[in-house]
Image (tube, rainbow, N blue to C red; front, side, top):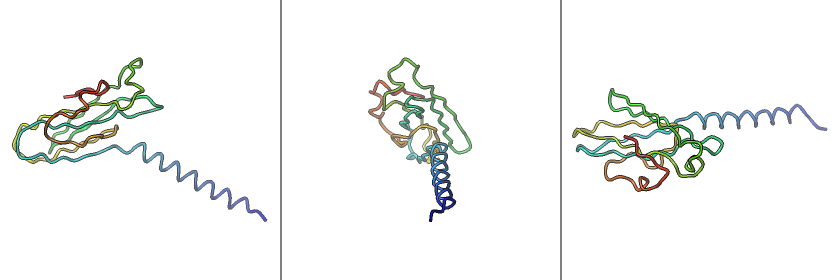
Amino acid sequence: MRKPGVFALILLTLITSLAAVAWAKGSRPATARFTPPAEPGQIFTVIDYPRAQGRAQTAMVTVAVGDANRSIIAPAPAYQNPCTTSTPAGIVLKLRHNTPDTTPYDFSTNGTIVRAPYQGDPPPELLHACYKLVK
């Protein structure tokens, strides 16, 4: 004997679980924390654009240092630009660390953090045609 109610319940549970996982994955921002050394320098972070239907979308980045916040909006490449559909494509975020303190930097973005924040020389992604430098 078949029990259609049990089959429908299992199917409904599976669909609900998959939808919840997809929703949670799409809405969670990428985050990173960086505590700089106690010396001035440049802080670099490499972020790929978020994607929708294979196309780059506008990246939004928030950086919090102590009580200060900075929000950055990096528009995606124009529609006819080949970087719109090619991967990798994104931004290289450059921040100045002017004081010799160790206050942590908290990064949050809707894109993908490819290279975590670090203090030092510029990353090799700057040589790639589909990465933009954002200061």
